[in-house]
Image (cartoon, rainbow, N blue to C red):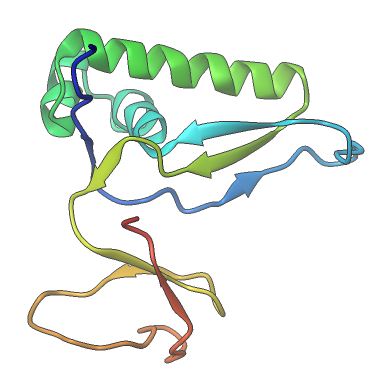
Length: 134
């Protein structure tokens, strides 16, 4: 029986639900699912310019596991670009650092501090919000 997978810590969810190529008929094309932990690995290594050891400590995984997550994300992005496929973000095997919400009206992403108990968007004051820590 295989070991249980440890949850990978993600600071915040991606700021997009999907990326689509422009000018391509996408009705018959498949999409590529990019997990939150893969997005976080790309962000830490390529955007924040952390080395794999530092990034793996932030995500709460070993360095080899981080390298596998990072490599998987790079391959998915490359495949989506070459084959002109949509990239969709999927929750995956992650745990959020804080509780995150998204407003379904203005699409703002935000977290609510524990001291404040509110059920509305801080940007547009809508009550149509969705919990992202599934």
